[in-house]
Amino acid sequence: MTVRQLCEKAGFSPVTELNDVEVNGAYCCDLLSWIIGRAKENAALVTVMTNVNVIAVAVMAELSCVVLTEGVILDAAALEKARQNGVAVLSSEKPSYETSVLIHNLLGK
Amino acid sequence: MAINMRYVVDGSDFTTAGEASTAVKMKLKKLGIAPDIVRRVAIAMYEAEINMVIHAGGGVAEVELESDKIIIKLIDHGKGIADVDLAMREGYSTAPDAVRNLGFGAGMGLPNIKKYSDEMHIDTEVGKGTTVTIIINLQ
Image (cartoon, rainbow over all chains, first blue to last red; front, side, top):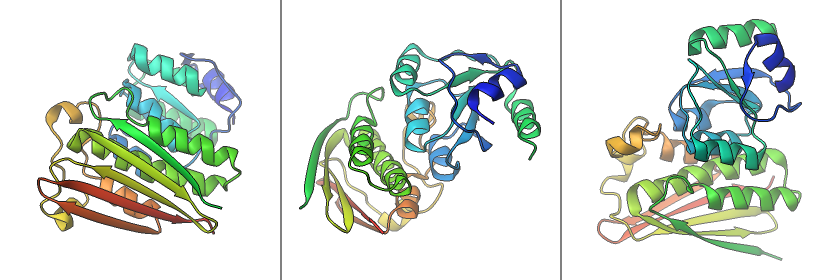
């Protein structure tokens, strides 16, 4: 499933431009070194962290997208960095657990 | 023929932390280095770069691309590491609260560097600084 399809099917709101990068799973965490050390390539990152470093981690670890939960708002610096690096950021009103379950079910895993 | 890259890491700004790693990642990609190697370099170097910003007020990153390996040196003149074995332990961190609020300070930085590199060396002296050397083989 692509980031665009995930966003549509899950009812997330796009924060930055959508793309057709493949999503192959999800990793739910708010600690950056756990994310960069454990998240698999092309995973969707489910988090409430909104600072610029989250985007840097998504770039370094080659994650497919960032899904912000609980309706949190991305920092201005993070938004700029996400746009510069072509990182798709999606927004979910649901908590991280429910958002992760939703992605899991949509991916059929 | 070896390719050398050198970057100054600004120690005062968390919004620019990771710029050196980003630049190296893009350069290696452009040079046609295998994607899994590029990802490992990016992760290991990013962790080391963040460490320099958190603990040492910045420093210098030197990257040497040889025919069979990539050598990354992160050189700082910060306070040094008193107990390297303890610093290598997962979950151990001396990062301040302000840094933890940004999502760092989980005590996973050095363990992650070790995990994603083929060789890692820490040369440190309390009060003088630290040089972290990361070696990643190209095959």
